[in-house]
Image (cartoon, rainbow, N blue to C red):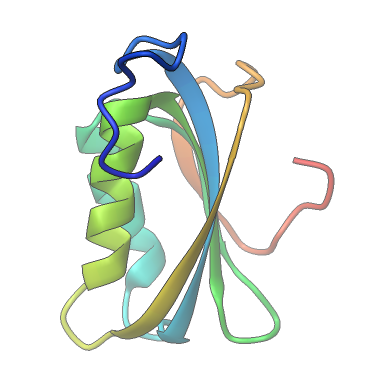
Amino acid sequence: MAGSDGAGQGRAPDATAAVEAVVHGWVQGVGFRFFALGRATALGLTGWVANEPDGTVRCLAEGSRADLERLLAALRDGPPGAAVTRVEASWRAPSGRFDRFSVRSAYHPGD
């Protein structure tokens, strides 16, 4: 649905959603989590970002679909020093349990 305006989909383009993104490449040790924190906070999103043991960065964000798409675009670019090779995104219904966007020291299964 990337690039879709939501018309005819039964969902408004600004409907609340959630996306879990796994960022691959040279993404640890370059300030990626704090880059994601800044972008997500500026967009008014809630959720978290964390380094994974396999060298990826995982992000779970909730907010408007349009703002989540903007976050994904930023994650694909990354901060200076990062070399993003791909971003895997999985869309889901929002949980509504986050009150802000935060940096986690590690992934928390079950989110």
